[in-house]
Amino acid sequence: MRTIYFLLQKEFLQIFRDKAMLVIIFAIPVIQLVVLAYAATFELKNTAFHLVDFDQSTASQRLVNSFEATGYFSQAGQSFSTERGVEDILQNKAKMVMVIPQNFGKKLRSGEKPGLQFLINAVDGSTAGLIQSYSQSILRQFSRQTQPRFSGVSVAGNISPIRITISNRFNQELDYIWYMVPGIIAILVTLICLLLSVLNIVREREIGTIEQLNVTPIKKYQFIAGKLIPTWLLAMFILTFALAVAFFWFQIPFRGNILFVYLTAGIYLLGIQGLGLLISNASNTQQQAMFINFFFVMIFMMMGGIFTPIESMPQWAQQLTVINPIAYFAKIMRMVLLKGSGWGDIQMMIGALTLIAVILLPLAVFRYQKRSA
Amino acid sequence: MSNNLAIQTNNLTRMFGDFTAVDHISFDVGRGEIFGFLGANGAGKTTAIRMLIGLLEPTEGEATVAGFNVYTEAELIKKRIGYMSQKFSLYADLTVWENIRLYGGIYGLSRDAIKSKANELLETLNLEDARDKRIGSLPLGWKQKLAFSVAVMHEPDIVFLDEPTGGVDPITRRQFWEQIYKVAEEETTVFVTTHYMDEAEYCDRVSIMVDGKIEALDSPNGLKQEFEADDIEEVFVELARGAKRGD
Image (cartoon, rainbow over the protein chains, first blue to last red):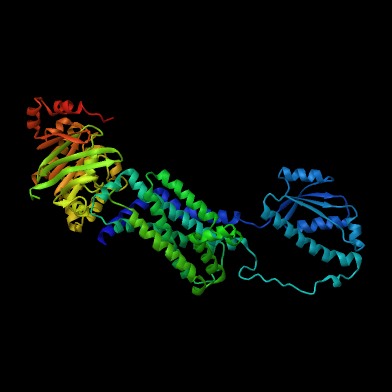
């Protein structure tokens, strides 16, 4: 224990003597959290559309107004040629062309069903889907408001006998930021923790100080503990800091027991550190370690269900996420913070994280050899 | 094994693939002896040292250090040896005192012992004013002297020095050797590799390694007589001429 104490003292001195470390601890989490939370959104805002209005009636004008009034769409161009509209899509000036045919208003008044054409840029399939569904719901509302007034014909007969009432639970406002912030916290804690662990052993190897430690009677577990504990505490501190930003700045409701978040993070970080120390130990240079680090970070991020739901991945990819620790961590964060999930809901995932840590950490201790074969 | 031997090797060998870095070397080093381990670059000195201090597993042969087997008792050896390498290895971002405290702590010295050792060591080196300076800001010569002092702080039976005086000026080198003599007087065995042939004259016995083999081993005077040379440098050049390796 005494040896570990001296090693910890050394590690902490080195960490806080590094000026970049203060930036890493305080600035990076806030910047990442604030920027990503506002930027990483799938909501539509001000989607530019090109208007081709062959009708030029009050009805067509009302239609355009009702699109713009939602704030989801804004008119970015106008012409009397569908080709011109498509050209705007090609030049990325618009994401959609709205073609209103002649006699749109007239048909609407006479109770006929007027057609409308929407040309949507579907290079980004999920955005195109959103544009389509937003447009449809705007159109539905538009026709409900307009038809009776113009035609005086009751549409009561058209109302479907099944009424669907949608109630959004847990995130009534469908606020995307609420959903993203716990995921982003998971990412940033992971990034910092993994990076610090990855650089740890290999930095000493590059400088040559590790050789001096290896000729001392220091035990392997003492050495690893000396490397592990400071990074773990640091990552837990950053987590706390980020949670405070989430609570006070983004006003995310902490519905569940915050201790579950800490318990999960504590176990999760041990696994991440095990992985980091394994990478660090296998690398000869910091550069090498960074490249391997990138590989894991990319896979963790892309397959962690933070930006894209795991449920929409192909079957084989979903099965792969079983061994992706950040997928559990992000999911538990969201469940506990946003839904107030309790022990029964998360115990299986905590079990999985424990298993990952229990495999990776001893492996890291084992792989670290004071003597090369 | 006899208690009077600090190091004993018998056909100690290390291969890297097909390459035999250290080729069946056998020698003994007595307790309290200053043993010079000479050889050209690439002769295998560092590989040999790394096997003795438990950083590298030997391919074959036997060796004991401080009475312990290098294969099976490497961690016991580590309690009884000190080591200072050519690659300077105190922590540059820690102060002199913090480095001393760290290594004192690792070797299990009590807090009081660490304090008194530190004071004694800084006084001897005349570095009291540098106590709270970071190692990285000190001149190379000071660093080397400090690294040596830290390596012998826990009063090891044997201290291994791998080119300890590389790159330092002649005056500092001389002071460094005064330090070495001082610990040798206290019955500490000194195993030192060097490039400087004048330093070989300070050793009790000298071995010269060529292409992984020990080609000569005797006292400096014995070697000079055997090779009819005026100094060790002549002996060394004579032996190293036949070397195939080197840079």
